Length: 246
Image 1 (cartoon, rainbow, N blue to C red):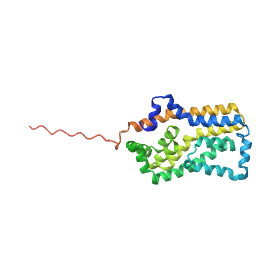
Image 2: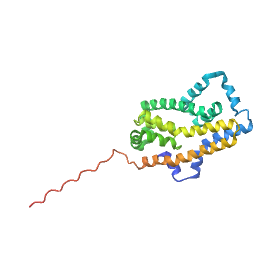
Image 3: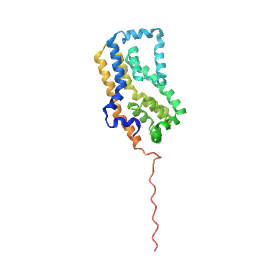
Image 4: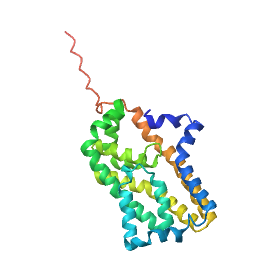
């Protein structure tokens, strides 16, 4: 089984904790800031910080999200901050636009320079990974992005380096990230407005989406694991037995 599928296949509680840790840390961190100082995580206060940018504030936010993969910052945290700054709806729209730009740049860079890197990373599984990404690009991008075991940036780079098409790959990523982005933006917006029930519901939805992604994304890991490599085999024609001598 690929490295990202080995950990949770056994249902180890420690591996589940590692998986959920980033989302839980972001949730707990924002909640703690809200409890310690309501002026810190407050929609009006934070909106005042970016007010000097005026109408350029959304563009600055989108531009920052576009370069996010190169900063190694988690997209979930930025989506929550976007919810605080712009509200749930517009934060989701801006985050998806920023994600599209980020995935586009990452795809083009990986297509040009990532083949050798992917071969080193995937090793013996590279042929199976390449076929899955190339022949099922939309499905591959959708399922690997839903699966939190595979970082989205890695999934896009793997698909691009494996010869996948641009639009199906990026479309699969955006479709898969939309629900989680909306939930995270809603959490940030609700928290900044003091809507505890809505914030709690959004947090539960975020964690639930991670668990659902693991269950659904295991299929990709199993498919790659069961692929023995090589080209698709076609049955060899049977040799006709020589006629018996009379």
